[in-house]
Every structure is written in C-alpha cells, then in structure tokens.
Image (cartoon, rainbow, N blue to C red; front, side, top):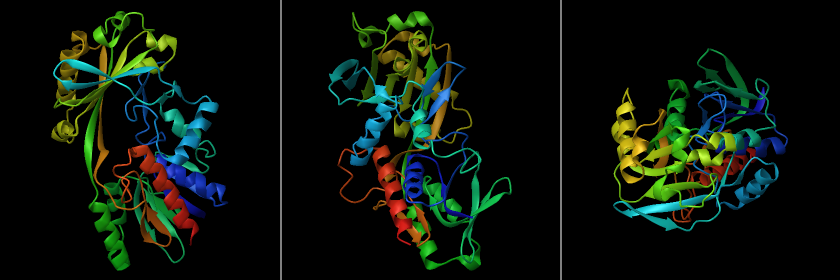
Amino acid sequence: MWDVAIIGAGLAGITCARQLTAAGYSVCLLDKSRGLGGRIATRRMDSRQKVDHGLRYWQPKAAGLQAITAELLDAGVIKPWAVRSYEILQREVLVPVEMEPVYVAEQGMSAIAKYLASDFTLEENLFTSYRAVAISAQTDYWRIEFDDGDAIKAKQCAIAIPAAQAAELLDTYTEDQRTAELSKAIDQLQAVTYWPCLSVLAGYESNKRNQMGGLSPQGSSDAEGWMVTDKIGTSTDWVGLDSSKRSAAERERPVIVIHSKPAFAQQYINAGDLQPAASVLLRASARKFCEWMAQPEWFKIHRWPYARINHAHPAADLMVNETLVCGGDWCVPPGNEDAGLQNIDYAYQSGLAMAKRLQMK
C-alpha cells in the first residue's frame, strides 16, 4: 500500500509528488495519458519533428519556479529562446513588444515534465495510461479503480486534474459514503469554469523559411523565432514559429503553432470534426502574415477543453477531508489574480499546498 497516490501527472501532481517523496513518503504518480506534463505537451510528428502544442514557452513568475528554472538550465533541459515578440493592436499592423527572457526545450516542452519526474520509474511508482474511474474510502485507505478493472490502495490521495474531472471522480462515491464535506467539495469543483483552446500545428516546405515577410527581418539568423499575440482578432490568439526552438536540421522546415481565441474554441470544442476550425485558423494567419500559411504540407489540430481558467477556486488547494485533497492550476488564492502569474505558477503553488496539506495529517 502506498502512503500517497497522486492522480494527475501535470506540473501540480509532479510538484506534489516531488515534495512528498523528499519528505520520505512512498508515492505513486498516476496519469491517464501516455506521457507526463498535462498541458506541458509536445507532439512528435515523426521520428525527428517535435512540436509544442500546449505550453508555448517557460516563463514562470513564482519564486520557487525560479530555482527550478536555474536547475533546468544547468541540466541542459531548457535554453533561452531567441524570439521576437509582436502584438496586433490594429488590423495588419505588427507592433514589436519587449518581453522578459523566455525559455524552451529543444527536445520539446514535455522534456521539462520528464526531468522533474525523473525519480519516478514506469510501472514501479509511475503509472501512465492509467485512467482513474472510481475512488472509494475504505476503513484506513483509499481504493482507486482504473478503467481496466485494476486498482491500487493508498493511505492518502491527491487529485491533481482539471476540476471538472475531479468532480466526476468524486461523484463515483456510493450513496452510503456520501458526506456533507464530500458534497461540498463536489459543489466547489463544479463551480470552477474554463475557457477552451484549439491548437493548430502546421508544417511547410523548407523554402518557406526565408519567406516570412515582416516576421523575418533581413540579416536575422535562421534560428531566430517569432511570435505574435493578436489583441483584436476573433479567431487566432497567438501564433509562433515553433521550429525555431529546435536543432538546425529541424529548423529547415518551418512549423508554426496557432492558438485560438477562447470564444472561437467554444464554438468547436465538442465538434466531431475539427478540420473546419483548423482551416479558419490557417486562413486567418495567412491573411495577417504570409499567404502560404493557408496551405501547409501537413497540419494537425488539438483541443484543450481546460486551457484557461474562467472562474477559479479561491484557495491554493481544495481539501475534501484530512486524507484527500484536490488541486491544480484552477486554484488561485485571493489577491493573486493580478500578480502576473500564469497557469504553471498556479499549478506549482497548488502542488506545494497539496503536499503540505497531506503532511499535516
């Protein structure tokens, strides 16, 4: 039996796991996906091409993550991204924007999660492709059941997944186990709301890398990247040259990533076919930047139902009882909304809070 089972291997779950392991607890880390990191995500298009379709770059604000940034740099996991940043404040006008240093991983942003979870070993204390479908309280432990019928036992449990999914998991309690504190926790989880996002990944012929128009000024190196935040458009929110993060061989063939506006994604998020949405986003980018962007060699589109918090839980974690806690980037303590923090900051802080909560038992 484990001391703690952590459901969800995004940054919040990994942070919680690291803290508890360092404190001497036996911890297992579980995730429904094959990989780690949640939205710190990288997609491999073939044996060589990697594309970040979740977190755009690493630029944390939380104090603890600054130390982790230094550790990641020393380990060679991340590097500074030589990127030019623009905003669109009026139609067809790119305005250069000064920004603080940002970091990327040449092997893909998912390398960050892999590094942070390097003390966890597959099928020993790290279990990926394990979807938790039910959780139940036994006399002195939690029983977590998976979709394949298997189950594990743990004295304590942290649920570090989107609030809506956490509510569904807690809702699997049998009627005779329902308590006022459980019902309250489910209500609080269901009160959290999100904005979705659609991410388009598009690849182009190698000759396009020198045809970036105003996005590639004369004399700039092939390695230099660009990104554009659209403040006035209705479909695209952000577009970036993802291939500029990679090795010289990968930079030969341009790859862009487009993130949609939340309201645009809302229109398509439950659609069976996302190709029409991808076409709209590609055509919109072509109108704003370069005509050839509308006709990639290949493209993929990914839906993120829980991309951006709309209404957050007003605390760093959500305690169900003394041995069960929930958390994630949807936990935003009062006063932090305008502190310039990002999802990764809230996820990290929530992971720390969950670990502290479970150590108090």
